Every structure is written in C-alpha cells, then in structure tokens.
Length: 371
Image 1 (cartoon, rainbow, N blue to C red):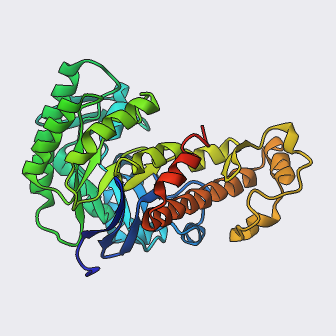
Image 2: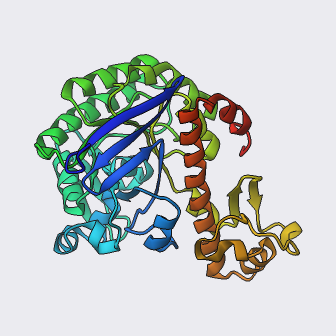
C-alpha cells in the first residue's frame, strides 16, 4: 500500500472482530487502534518520545480548542500540529461537534451558519461552520479529518435525534465540498441517531450516499448504559461499509473497547488513561488499582515488571502512593504513562487474538475484568 494516499486494508476477521491497517502519509496504523487524546496539542503529562515507546501510532487533537489556542495562524506558521508538538506520526482531529454538546451553555446551533460559540476562555463570539471546521483541521494538517456534526445529549426524543441527523447530514455535505479532493488525507462521516436502529441506519445511508473515507459512530458514550451501547453497535455495525475504517468516538474503558471490537469497530479514543492517571487510578493486567488506597503504601512491586519505559518498572506502588499523598505531579505523569502503555498493550493483545482466531476466548476472559 502507498503511504502517500489514505487507504484502509482489512487483513483478517474473527467472527465480527476485524484486524487491519490504515495507511496515511505519516505512517500506518494497526487496527483495532487506540488514540490517546491530545486536546490542546499534548497528551497530558507525557513526552512524545514516550508515547512512541508505548506503541502509540496515532493521537487525537481537537479542532475547537486548537482554534482558540494556539490559533490557526500560528499552526500555519509551524506547518501544522505535527511540527508544533514534535509528533511525526498520524493525527486525527475531532471537528468540534462534541463541544457543541459538552459546551452547550456556550453555544447555539444555526443550520446555515454552524455552531455559534461564546468562547469559554474570554467570551469572544466564534462561528464554527462546517467549512471553518475543515479549514482549521487542514491548518492543523490532520491526517484524518472529521466532518462537523451535531452531537445531541442522551435522549429518547426521536424528534431531537432526527433534527440532529438533518443538521449533521447537511453539514457533512458542506464539509465534503470544502474538503475537496485530497487523497493524502481521510475524511470521515459521523453517524448519529442515538439508541435507535432505524435512525442510525437512516443517518448512515445518507452519509454513504455522500461518500466518505471512513465512518464514525457519534452520539454514544454520552451517559447511556454500556449494554445499550453494545446493543446499538450490534444492530447497526453490519450496515457500515466493510472496506472502510469504523470509529467509535470517545470510547472508553478497556471493556468498552473490547465489546465494541467484538461488534466490528476499528478505532477508539478516550481521555480515560490520562484522566485516571491524574486521579491515581491505574489499569493493569490485575485489574484497576486505586493507588490512593493505603493498602499500597508498603507495596514494593511495580505496576508492571515488564514496562521499562522511563524506568516505570523501577517505581513501586508504595512510592506512587507516597507521591499521590504528597500531591507531587510526578505521580500523575508516571501513572498516566503507565496507563497509555497498558492500553496499547491491551490493543496489541486484541489484534493478536483476532489474527490467531482466539478473540472469543480473550473476550470472555476480559470483558468484565475492568468493571
């Protein structure tokens, strides 16, 4: 496969679980893939060289936040986010659609204009149209660009969800026109429809008619039960094009990821590894460990004896407990790095088991392990 053009290759499948590769001009990405979140142009508390050491092949940046800081002009001067933050591998950027929901008190929706924000930093008025979102993502020099969509809050109101599909479809058309023809980058459409199969399929069919390089499931991981998320994925993933990557946005815990992989999803992102690291929660092959707990204060074992990145296997759980209790920033840095390492190790095991035809056994062993 050429690395000058964006493409996807499905290499093998074990029941519905898929393993493949996404090719970009900045390198390839093994799927299923986990993308650490670098909202402000940094994965919080982690050096880019250390990210590489964990096996991370792609990170996520955020259009809305990068538009505010450092701004488009500065990113253009640095020829994009890769150079600005010293990350040479692929970057996917969210379109700003999630902030339409998460910062709803600061914005309103206008079908023609887009999302009209009042900056949460200084109150300045910002209009993020579908065209503007694509322009900002091109200034970021993203390898995978998302269309601007309306991501509604969790609701059973079909009228609200149907209107979000109407808005998102119109914005997807405009995003595609603004994106133009650029075979070096991928443009993804975002499927909405809440927890309703008929609305999801309606949204997907409209996006397929427009035509995209990949398809994302939006509007999930917004407060619904895990079982409900798995149910809608089970009902709708088979309708997604088989020859295009499938991305579940904003997910999640290891068990969330495992369940979604079992339904045929290829890509994931979540702030959980670093957010948990900042609160003293570590993900390990022994389950979740709350290192604030006093039972760890005399524990001389490391989180993972095999992880030598930054000498992590030379720091005891007792020492990490001490750092947390002392409110030392090193605690969040070490635990966050460990969590990213664990997530990438977890994804490698998922890919290995899909390729070996043993995914079902791996799934049964770990699906409830981290709850």
